[in-house]
Structures are given as C-alpha cells and as structure tokens.
Length: 224
Ligand SMILES: [Zn+2]
Image 1 (cartoon, rainbow, N blue to C red):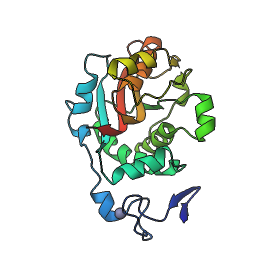
Image 2: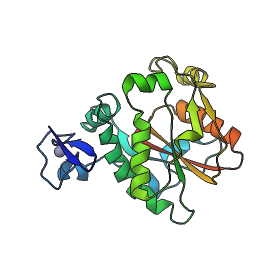
Image 3: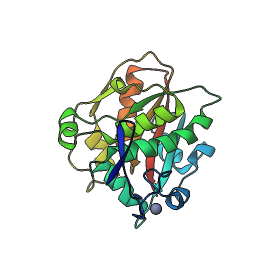
Image 4: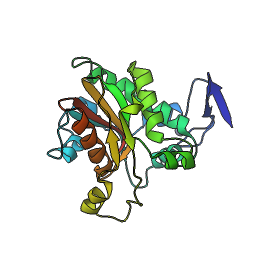
C-alpha cells in the first residue's frame, strides 16, 4: 500500500524492516533511518571513494552516502529503487544525501547536479533512470539546479557483472557524449559505485567538452 505526499506516492511500509510506517515516517521507520549505514565521506576529502578515483581523471571531491554491504537489509531497499519500479525511494534517499552534501559545499559554492544518464532505449524499458531520481532528490533538498542535458549516453554496454576491472573500463569507452555547459562546478551523481568505470567514462567526456570545470562525484552506495 502506498501513501501520497504532494504528487509523489511512497510505500507505507518500512523499506528495510517492513514495519508499517506511522504518519511522520516516509520510506523508512525511524529506527532504520537511524541505522542507515552512512559512510560519512562528506566529512573527509580523503575518503575511500575519493581514493578509488585518484589518478584516473581530475576531480575535486568524491562522496558516497551509504555502504553497500553483502547481506545488509539495506540492499533490499536499493534493489527496489533500482529495479523494482519504485524510483520515489531514490528521490527520498537523494533528499537525505542532499542534506549532508549541502554543508560540504557551503564554502566552495553550489554545484549544478548532473545524473549519470541511461540510453534512451534502456530508459524506455525500465521506465525511469534511477540516477536522475536520486539527483533530483539531492537538488531538491540542497536547493541546487539540475542539468540532465549536460551528458547523454549513446551506448549501453553488455552486463558488466562478469568483467574484470580492465574489461569494464574497455567496455565503457565512448559510451557518453557531453555538451558544453555554462557552469563552473558540476556534481555527477550515480546510484552505485563498484569499479567506478561508468563514473570515469562519463567524467572524461564531461571534462573533454568542459575543460577546467570543477567536477565532483556523488554516489548513493559504495561497495566496500
Ligand atoms: Zn524499519
């Protein structure tokens, strides 16, 4: 059963423990919200996600919101968001993430949020791009602009699950086409970072068309 808030309908059971939500709760019960496996990357520029991108391309910061651990009940929530036809879960998680990110951009200035795109045929098949819902949640809670047009995905690749790191990188080559944008600072958003090959390929095409732009990275989940 779903309950609606404005135009958006959220499930009325906790996405992690399944308990029926009380009226003040959305998506997660207060206990599961409290126990979210937060990375706290936004408090430290030298975090494991930033380290995993070091030397691959120029970026000004990298942050994930949650740890994506084997056997964690929070995986179920992310699965429902990505594959289960419930993109509003991603919007809600984006809003939580945006609140944390907001503080870390106070000094350097607001970024324009860009979701990692999906090819048009894949988007039609799934019905939505999960990164876009997440980015919209971040932008809404932080009060930032979103610019989905900054980069397009022109090639969808075969499943990446069986390829090794080098194979995934090769697989991702030339998958994106970026456009010049009139901004100084972008925040590229994706749902899950594993090897980072998608983020890397997307970032390289953005940087090629926007030399000197300050690019930072955000992911909902980080695989340890
Ligand atoms: Zn719960």
